[in-house]
Length: 437
Image (cartoon, rainbow, N blue to C red; front, side):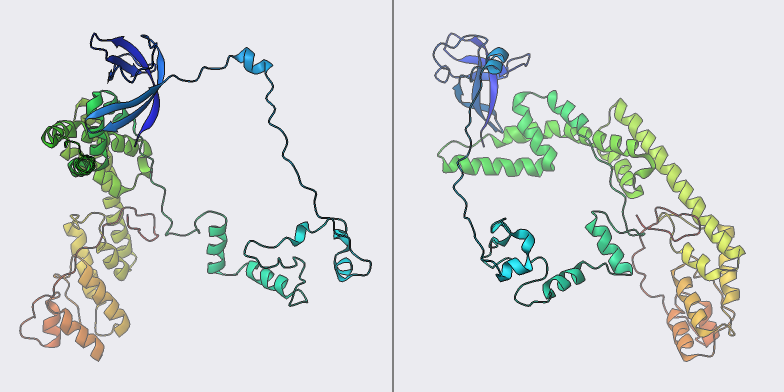
């Protein structure tokens, strides 16, 4: 697709071609045939150019002299008359005294039929005060019923959406920090003109985007009867520019993460730190990556301490079920429960699962034990006299070997296939529920 811009003629070669640069730039950018330059063209003239950008560079299609600028004095002394729109005579409506329209709406006498215009779909506009075919304001009552606020949670959510904001609650996500293009623009400014189209394709989708653009341009050239572009040379250029483009993109992401601070989601911060190992870093990028890695380790250590503190507080308060549930949701998948805390957790669960425990509570404790990291070391004191509890103990004997002895199984069955690990937590706040990233 062609576009227009202003260029400046810088020099003329003996062969008749001209060199040009963008208006206001320092160095020439390319050449243009002398056939396209209007007669009388001189060095320093600024012309309007129609250009096309391709993988091989920028090509000028046509040149025209720009329109002369109007001086401030000339524009100030000149009055431009645009004229007023012609208005046709309106329709005058005379109503007879005693008519129904005058009885129902006397305040609209003399205002014409402005309020009785037909709708776009061809149907007559209804009476806003409740009149119409149904009479007695039935339409008005239906509108008021639709506009009446709904009490409860549903009404609150509808009102918040109507006001343009999300309803209050834990499911609302924080906005992501905006990623600037400062480093990418600086990297593109250092490239040669013929490298810019390739770099732009790399920013869009890497080497696959360059290959796709080459295929599309070759298809267009084949349809127009033109020779194809040099794909090997362009791919070699793309391989050369790929480290520069990747580094500039990573710097923009890393700068946004550093500016966001604690507002940056832990999952996205971890992704930025992990991406630093896939690009060739310079001195500035190494300093930035080191700072982000320290920030990530600090936040993860804080979450790990809060996780262990919640388990310890729940055990001290006798809330064994809560302690088991918290232990099943570590802040990191690789996080391990400390040995002393694991011993206390297994001992508390063993003492809580007795034969006198209500079946519902015992089953809840068993489900929490199966998800906890101490399931192999828990030794329940007994199983309630309930068919449901005994059947659950038989199914869970492969994961909790001590249950096999309690229900009389000579050999514990093999443990069932474990589901994939749950997503780690990213934030733990006080005694409230922990949230996922």
